[in-house]
Length: 120
Image (cartoon, rainbow, N blue to C red; front, top):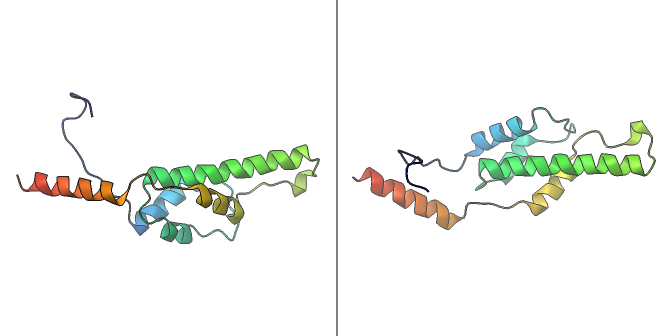
């Protein structure tokens, strides 16, 4: 924090299940997803992730699909056999590299700070 940048400190907790589902929906709203993808399942798997973490996960899955499309085209695959949607395999690979940016210790620190500010 730098002086003069904020007049108030606002604590935003990590998103709950419903909010994580909404973040997945917003982050993939313009993306072609495979029919077997369940954003509800992804939301359940991302307990403790921030909105930015979830958005990064979706962007990574999209980039993986794009790379696969390019690789398919480079290999000479016919147009109708190239990757054109984001599949569960793309998301699984993205999940394998996903990380939580907010630790349990960070959450505890912010909640303690929030409680101390309420006591004033």
